[in-house]
Length: 106
Image (tube, rainbow, N blue to C red; front, side, top):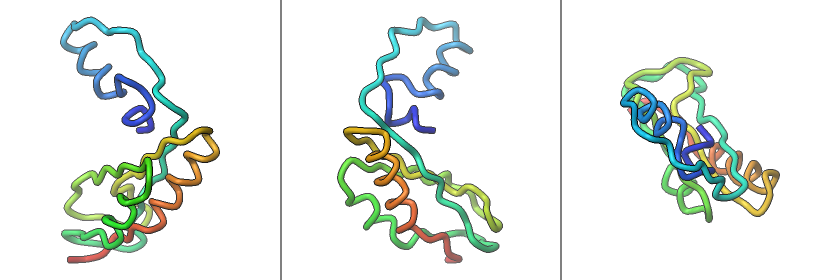
C-alpha cells in the first residue's frame, strides 16, 4: 500500500500495466513514506469513519478507505499514508493519522 504515496507508479499501476502488456517506465521513489492500517475494533455494518477529516488535515497525509460494507475485529478497513523527510518521520505521521480514525456502525 505504501507505493500509493511513495513512488510514481503504485503496485496497482504496475499490475495493470503488466496484465495489459503496457510498458513500465522508470520507477522513481518520491520521498520517504509509510503506511498504517485502519482496523475495525468490533463487528460493523455500513461503517462510518469518525476522525477521517481530522486525520486528512495532517500535513503530508492521505487516507484510503477500502469501501467494505462490513467488518469484524482486526479487519483492514483502510490505510493511512504519509510522507516525511525520513521513514521514521513518515511512520510516525501515518500511525498518528490511523489512530485518529475509528470504524463505527452507521
